[in-house]
Image (cartoon, rainbow, N blue to C red; front, side, top):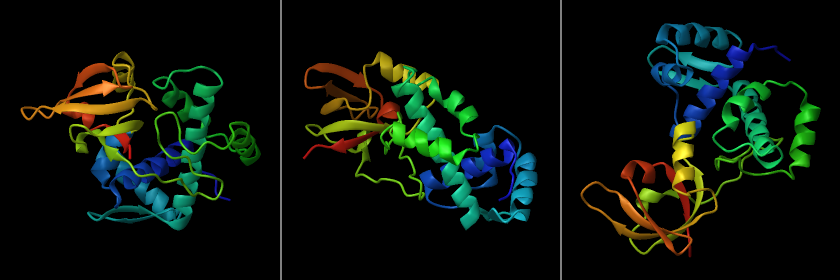
Length: 222
């Protein structure tokens, strides 16, 4: 089995997450934005990873992971999201604190540790931000979800995930008492700016901006 540096693993995971969200190849600029580095540095790393047969890279045409690259990236995502569950569920970290810690823990190589962690946590399907956790075979649970912005007045739903997971956004949601599992009902949509008035768990009314609505995933109630 090939040995990768943490930097190489981070690039594979970045490409995986871009293509997971957008459903297509990842551009050099998109990777540079995620990795907070220059396009030139990205190009150098892509050539290195292509040399290890972990991705398919053609200049000006984007990047796609090879079968082996996707397998490695999926395993990294699995470890990252399992560690996030562990940190929140067992160590009482808040959901805005766990990403950077999980970034360090995801590079642990012991597959036995990961399997025991998964079993100990009772094989969770989603992490604290609502992202699916790959199982040992690399398969992820799916569910019907839409952005809150797609709902109409009168629609009821359950908050199940976030599109953005920056600490500042998650802290904002905490202040607004919006967390995974919160029941929502759209009371009114304001045409001027797309903001919404919603009821939380059937009683408390709050108003949130269109930007926030575009970053919350919900499951509509039947």
